[in-house]
Length: 138
Image 1 (cartoon, rainbow, N blue to C red):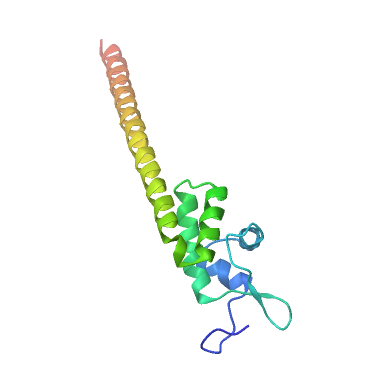
Image 2: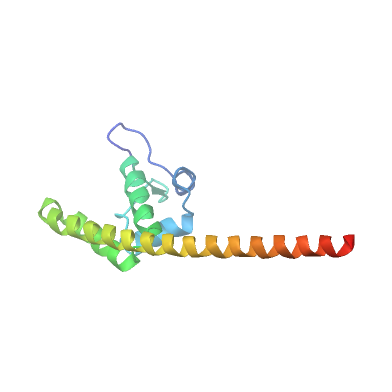
């Protein structure tokens, strides 16, 4: 397969190297419909297009921010349907953004609690070690 510039597409290994995604994950994403059907070379090897890189990076961002595969698949389906689904896609992303903001807020609260606990332990350790030092001086 050649792209609009007449060059071969990326192999699975090249795509994996550029995106940090394993070949197994690439094939899985294709199988479940997250990636469009990938073109093939004359030898029947997958060849990814340049636009597949950006789409995959976006999918990874969705996944890393907690979007379930099923919702990602729905988003990909809407994307394939074209401009008539722009509002539905925007709504999905806005909802995901709100979910993400709520998770971030929750995580920040957990972080503050852990910081307080670590500080309490540091104080206990300092007090304990200070009292041991004082016992030996007597």
